[in-house]
Length: 117
Picture 1 (cartoon, rainbow, N blue to C red):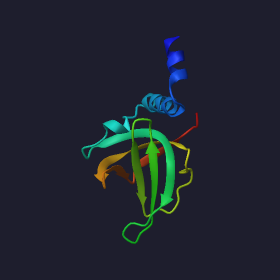
Picture 2: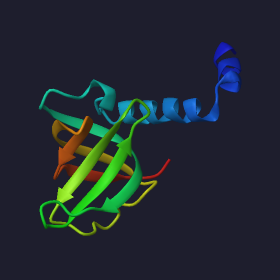
Picture 3: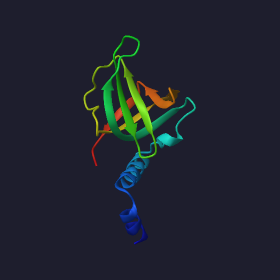
Picture 4: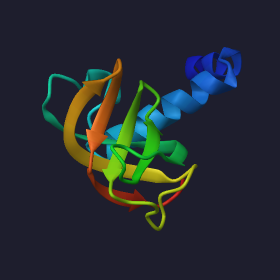
């Protein structure tokens, strides 16, 4: 009962963040907020944005992944488009996490498109 009343009192964005964190945890992914230190991690969440942004004269597809705890930029170098990589899609990604311009970034991650909730 206590959980029911706390959900009623929580803003909608916090409820959605809690649900995303729970879904990511079920897949065995590490919370993005816990990632860092140039190590390999598996993360999961929802793609917020997908943009084509050239890097060094070559195309690069960038997607912002949000898991309810933090965001990470997924970057596929040399790609203009990847089927299924679109805003709102749930994705599980694995790769080396580094920092660039104060943001967490994963270049050319392995990824798995997850079914929607």
